[in-house]
Length: 237
Image (cartoon, rainbow, N blue to C red; front, side, top):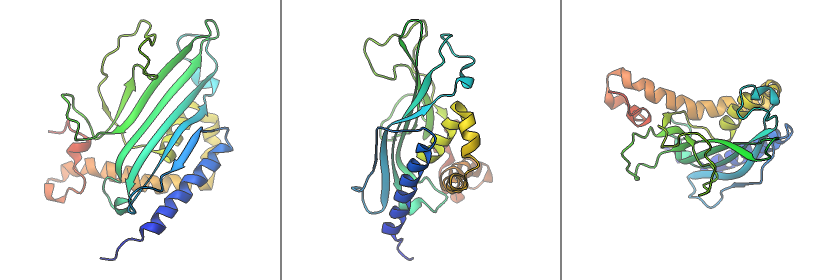
C-alpha cells in the first residue's frame, strides 16, 4: 500500500484552517489566539483556538432569563488532534477533541455577568468513571469559569448526563453556533461557495463516519464494523 503524503495532507488542513479564520473574520467573528500545531507527529494534525467570539443577534434572545438582556456573545475554545491516516477513511478521525462554548451576557439592571456553557468532548477511555460516556458527548457546564465563589443562583447543580453528539471542530462547530445564535449572518454565510464546499468536505470526513458507525450496529455482522457503534452509543443493547 502506498504511504500517504502526510506533509501534503497536513498542508491542506493548515490552509483550510487559516482560510476559514480569514473568512469568518469578515462576519465580525474574532479570536484571541489561533495556533496550528506544527509539533505533532508527522501523521497527525491539530490546532488550538482560544477566545473565538461570535456576536449573538438580539432576535435569538426572546426567551432569555434574566429578562432585559439584549447583548450577548458566544466565546469558544477549541483544541483537536486528528489522525491524517484516518482522514479519508470511514473511521474516527480524531485522537482528541475539546470544543467548549460559553454564552456570556451582562444584566443591564445589575451589571452582573450571566453564563451558559457546554462542551463537546471526545472521551478519554483511559479515565474510567461510573457514568456512561458516549465517545463524543455534549455536557452542560455548571461553573464555566471554574470559580469557587461562582454564583449559581437558584438552579440545582449536579453532573448532567452526557448526551451523544456528533463531533464538532472549528468549521462544523462554528457553523452550528452561527446558525443558532446569528441566523441573519448564517443566511449570508451559507450562500458563500467557499463555506459550502468546506462544510461538505468536513461533513464527509467527520459526520459521515460517525453516522455510519451507529448505522452499522443493525447490519447484523460485528466483523463488518469499522468504527465500533457501541463506543458512540453505549446505550445500544
